[in-house]
Length: 71
Image (tube, rainbow, N blue to C red; front, side, top):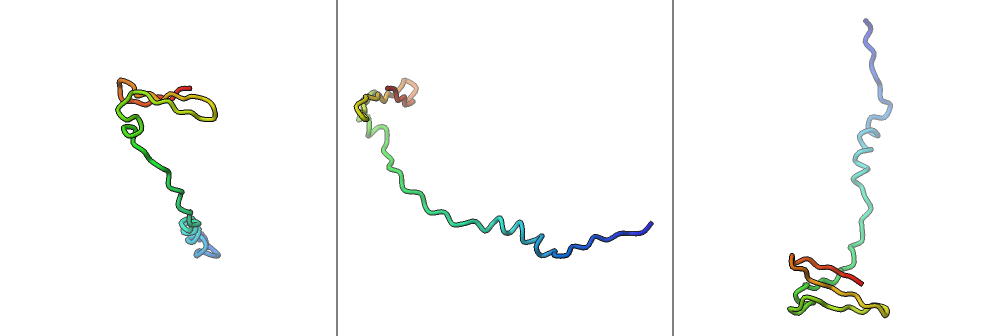
């Protein structure tokens, strides 16, 4: 039974392809998002009214310490 061989014309290219995936474009750092603690925002209360474009939104602290924002 004759043995066949597989010849790769450019084996270097085959090895370079996975490495090219690692060469990603640098990503600009994201703008820093302001953070504020809910305790500071609510100041010990359970509800806060936020006005936005003429509408009122209610930020409430539930009994399970979850925040709910409703219009």
